[in-house]
Image 1: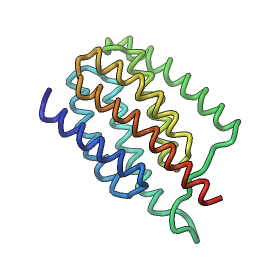
Image 2: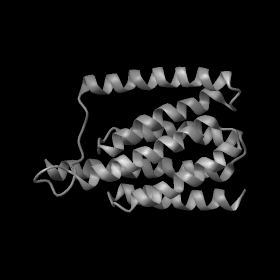
Image 3: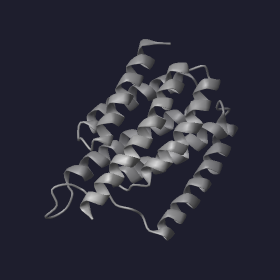
Image 4: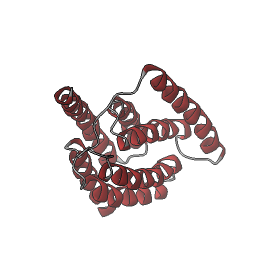
Length: 186
């Protein structure tokens, strides 16, 4: 366990806590956290996880802008729900991304190519949904975090596996809090 793994884990918990609270500080904290996390994952040859951290960096930057520009007459971007067809399209896109990315990572000799690719695909979709404040991001995080716990445990990154256990619980909390926000707005 390195100091970078510890710092990444602590910032990860802080960042998700801030996201649950819909606090803009989640974005700068998240940008630092994913930079550290990406470096640690690259050293472990978890290339999908490394690429995911790069995508998270871009999505966090986009989300930060999007949350600070909610549109005319709105003080805050509202939490919304996707329609049924859109949810189905997101699911199909995640499946295609998972299998395609897994095949590429397998070819490049990545560790746990398909398991890590699943975490990549579901996390990418969840991060993009979160940037737009769609409630469906939270069940996505539950699925991604479940798989990530296994990936990190197999790679003996036990602090990261534990961190994703905490993220799993925080995703439940976030789902509940965001649903409560939606019901207050209705």
